[in-house]
Structure formats: C-alpha cells, structure tokens
Amino acid sequence: MHTHDYILTNGRTLSGDTVDIEIRSGIIDRIVPAGEGDPGDFDSDRQHDANRRLVTPPLIEPHLHLDATQTAGDPSWNKSGTLTEGIEIWDGYKKDISVSDIVDRATRTVEWYVAHGVTRIRTHADVTESSLTTIEALVELRNQLSDIVDIQIVAFPQDGVFTNYNHEALLRESAEMGVDLIGAIPHAEHTREDGVASINLACDLAESFDMGLDLHIDETDDPGSRFTEVLASEAMKRDIGQKTVASHATALHSYPNSYAEKVISLLAESDVSVITNPPDNSVLQGSYDDYPRRRGHTRIDELQEAGVTVGIGHDSVLDPWYHYGVADPLDAAFILVHYAHMAGREDVETLWQMLTEANADVLGIEGYGLQEGTRGSLVVFDAPDGFNALRQQPARTLVVNAGKPVAETEPANSHVYRENGTQSVSFNYE
Ligand code: FE2
Image 1 (cartoon, rainbow, N blue to C red):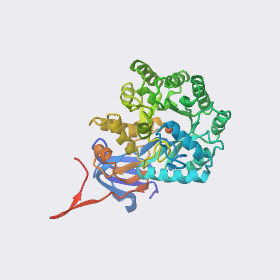
Image 2: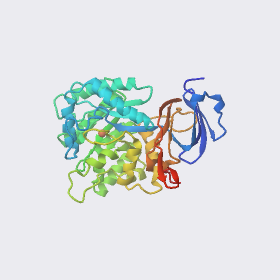
Image 3: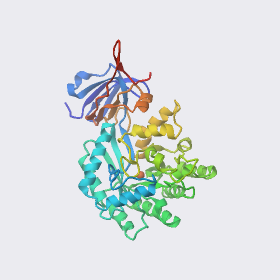
Image 4: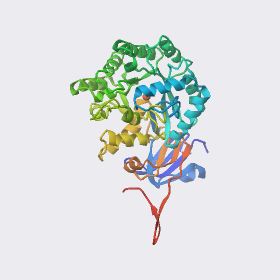
C-alpha cells in the first residue's frame, strides 16, 4: 500500500452529490457515486466515512503576514485602529526580531490553518526590516512545513521602497533570497511619483527574476489614491496580468462611480486579480471617518460582474492591524457575508467560488479541485452543505493533503438537559 493512498466515502460535494473519492499515489484516481468506491483496496487507517458531511477541495489562504502573526499587544495594542498605528507598532516590534521568534509564531498559525483545511498559503514578508530576518525565517519555515502546506513568499516593502535610503537595496537583495513574488505598497510612498516608480520597480524585478507580483495597493479610503490604474496599465503593457495581484484596492470603494468603472475595466482587460481581506479591511477602513462611517471595502460585486477574479484572504491573525483571528478562511467569508452585503442565498455559491477556485487562480495553482487527476487533497466539514459550513464555521473533521491525512478535529458535542431526558443538539439547518 502506498503511503499516499486514501479513500473517502459518502462525502457530499458543494454541488450536492454524495460520492466516494479514491486517492492513489497522492492523486485523485476515481470519484464515483457513494457506494461504488472500493474501501477493500485501502488499509483501515487510510479510509474515512464522511457520513454525508460536506467535502471540498483544500482551502487556500492567499494573503497573510506570517512574520507579524501572534504579536498582538506586543509592544502595544493598536488604539486608533488605523493602518498607520499598526505600522508604527510593528516597527517597534521588528527592531529586535529573530528567526526563531518568527518561526515559532508562524508555525503555530500555520498549524491552526492546516487544522482548518488550508494546505496552501501566500505570505508577505516585510523587507524593510533591515536584517532581512523576516525572509530568512519564512524561507526556513517554508522548508520545515513543506510536509503539510505549500507556502509562497512575497517580498513586501512595508514602509515603502523610496522612503528610506536603503529600502530599494533591501527589496533587490530579498529577490535573491528565495522569495516567490515581488510586492510594493505605492500608497505608502511619500509622493505620487514615488508610488508610480515603486510599481515600475516591482514590475522590473518580477520580470527579471521571472516571478509573480502581489502589491498592497490603494489600501486607504482616500479617493485620490489612484495606483491600481497604474498597476493594471503596466501589467497590460508588459503582458504579465495573469501573474499580477492587486491586494486590498479599498480606495475603489470611495472612488466616484465614473472613475471606478474605468479602473474595473482596466483590471478586467489586464487580467489582474484582486484579493479582498475582510478581517483587516473591516476594522482598518473608515477609521478616519466621522459619521456616516464608510465600510471602505473594494467593489467585489462590480469586479466580479466585469470578470475580474476576486480572491478572499485573512491578512492578519493576531497582529497590530487585526487583534482577532483563529486562522480560518471561513471566518473571513463570514465577515464578508455581512460587510459586503453577501447574505443572499445565491451568494453562498459566490463565496465558495472565492474560497476555492478564485483563490487557486490567484495563487496560480494548476490542477486544483475535486476532479480525477488533480492532487489528492480534500477537507471534510462537520456540516451537511456549503450554506451550513459558512453559517457555523464547523470543525474540519478531516484534512487530507496529497493522499496523507494532515489534520483531524473532533466536532463539538452539545447536549441540553430536559426534564424528559437529555437532548442532543444539532446546529444544522436543512
Ligand atoms: Fe496585507
């Protein structure tokens, strides 16, 4: 028996089919109607009866900051709730940062993600930290955890590239240290001209190292912050849109409609994807507003209508920008349900499309999904369908990566004591 063989029986897919899934040599070999699989062909510890629970492809975290994770409150909590104060607190923390500190904190967060069904993560690493300990630590982490998760690293100049004499050199140096993508943060540069120059620099570096691009861009409520158009235009001219991501793009919320339409058309034409990060954007945006207070979120519905791929990320888990989080993509989706008015029944399918296919597309994953011939990875939820999973954010009873079980969680078990006896409680709505 191969160590990357596994059979899942009686799993209910997002489309409602109940199936058996046979994984051989780490690849999905057969998906057949429930009852038609062959458990006898697999060792007893290599099979699991999902009992009509939801099974999906593995989840993906496309936007995260593992170098800063689990530092909330150290050295202080973010009192104003602004992006700027978050950056100031992080500047204080990173002065004494070490490889072991980052690896220890990031490992805990990655293990939480895996327990929630995530087998792929894109993390940013702050390359304005002058020793580049962040890159060293996350490259080491990527190797250490390669048995349970695939990690992509973005060289991310948190404080801007042209805001200090040595930041450009640090970004260039980091590109040779094993990162997978180049980042930028044009709205944090001192001037409009420097912001545009930072986009060109990132594009030049990405092209010369044959890497993708993932920029923090227009993460502000300022309608005058107009860098997304520059990125989309540059990606179009260089024909690199497919490998380019505009993360956040929250100023799109505050643009006049006529200008927003232009930017959205440019994104669609250039094939640049967008990532929205509901946990952070819900607390950071609007923090300078009096009332009415803007939600400050990017225009998900209009982007999708125009054909732009919109992924969904968490951004922060327990750091100066977002104090909460348990490293669960369903948490981010639950926030989006409320925050982006996606509470309609038809939005369930859209949210799952974002959590699965859109995120896979953003990360450039080929061969993703529950199909014969793709990687033998899946997640079983303690819920009967996609709606209940979004509603409850239930335990992931089983996570399989390339035919190997990598996490299991015992579901909660609630009882109510009635006079006529103990009642077992199910939170499902069917
Ligand atoms: Fe971010």
